[in-house]
Image (cartoon, rainbow, N blue to C red; front, top):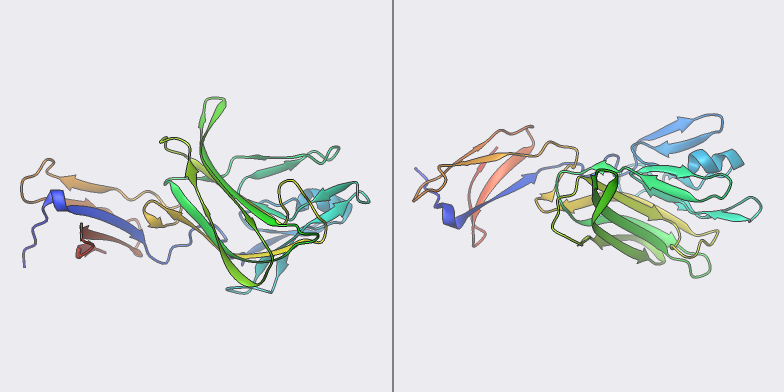
Length: 260
């Protein structure tokens, strides 16, 4: 039966099915390094390359997983006989530490093709001396030598014996389009670093303005013609992979058709 879609009453929802939203989002893949010896989750940065020089590891692989086989275990620890403290930390950015002052800095991040609405995951936590874990997200676009911070979000996470869902919403500061996203997960708060605080993290995901998608996947282009149209419109889509579906809905949420 011939279907006629009136352009004024149709919008297109593009969804990615069974897509991994972040690289190594469930921490199943780890790299081993020697001299000094430590492990690092693939696609993620941690303080381990620096703290391992003092035979201290703040991020380790754990078999106490929410899904799959492994999770990431983060622990805040003392360094230099208690002179400094290092949090267990995970980030998608590059991570550098000044070994003299133990100050750290972040750079780059995950190339972004959509606006992030929220960041979610599963965690367990036991804070030392009323400590709390923290999760920060932000997105930006580099403009010459300057950085345009477009959105940010932050949450403190408290003790949780069982696996618990957390969600951090992105608060946008302007309507600019970002090109880079980053997340920083720490086993302590920003102001206090209490040794002995332990956090387990697993099953992370990013929600964007087009649903839950793989941020590394090329943007899906939908051509619509003629434009303007009176009573009939044609949608043309080149699907980059077999697991993506384009669905069409009316304003009441009724599905009118799809392309697979």
